Amino acid sequence: MTIRREMLQAARRAQNLLSDSRDLVVAFIRRQLREDGGFKGRSDNSDLYYTVFGIESLLALGADLPVENIAEYLKNWGAGESLDLVHLACLIRCWADLSCTILATEVRDSILTRLGSYRSTDGGFASDIKSECGSAYACFMALGAYQDLGLKAPQPAGIIHSLKALRTDDGGYVNQRGKSAGSTPATAAAVIILKQMGEPVDKSMAQWLLRQQHPQGGFLAMAAAPTPDLLSTATALHALAALKTPLDNIRRPCLDFLDSLWSSQGGFCGHAFDDTIDCEYTFYGLLALGHLDSGK
Image 1 (tube, one colour):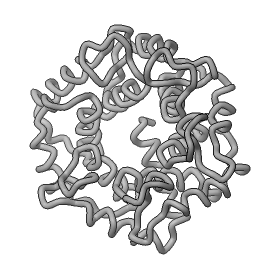
Image 2 (tube, one colour):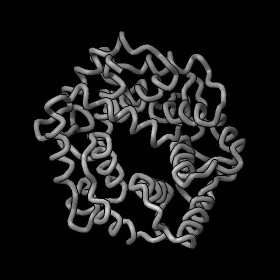
Image 3 (cartoon, one colour):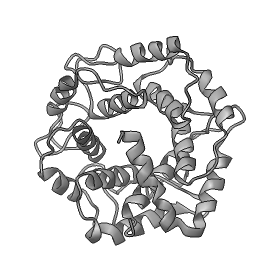
């Protein structure tokens, strides 16, 4: 199963815990849809990055998608000639979410060429073209993009080589070489990449991730972070699930943490000091809830 499908499968289980609040979330996400077919980000304008999360939140909740309207928005981006790696991967993922086969062959070929240009010298992928070193996040996005195009990432050994250089002294992973303390999102990304590529994952990774949990619930982005956040929590839970780690001992505090970020408007914010709810964090809320559903 691809990265995209695994995340959607988990997020769909959030409906079991949302119960009657499911309709609130659907209504909130629909309010983020702009007239041009994109979903708004932190401003009132459509944003390609946030459009992924708007689409996938509706898919996870079994809500109807305005496919034709969204497709018109995506067409504006062509083959992603102006996009960095993250936004290019978002474009590819949006098309995959729509299950569309309307991309002309030449457009798809151009997208693939653009995607390949983000290969780093060390064999991984980076957010910038002609980078010497890859990052865990960029490798995660690139691998998912190739999967969404129905392809295997070329030269997989290069990705593994790049990841090895991102392992930190404390046993985690980072997105930039030379740091001694691991990052929760980067470590979670590395776990998923290795699992997807059929590579062995060090048994200590589950314990490393569990050590990042805050006593009051949620996961820290890194050990020195002042407060837990939703991105780190959702990605850590996703990676722990991939490692088949029992979540019974952390379920209740994590649910309490998610409840603290929930808004009656139907969405989630990113952390305790953030009072803005958006499509991105709402999807991560669904992903986290899905993994914390004890009835799965």
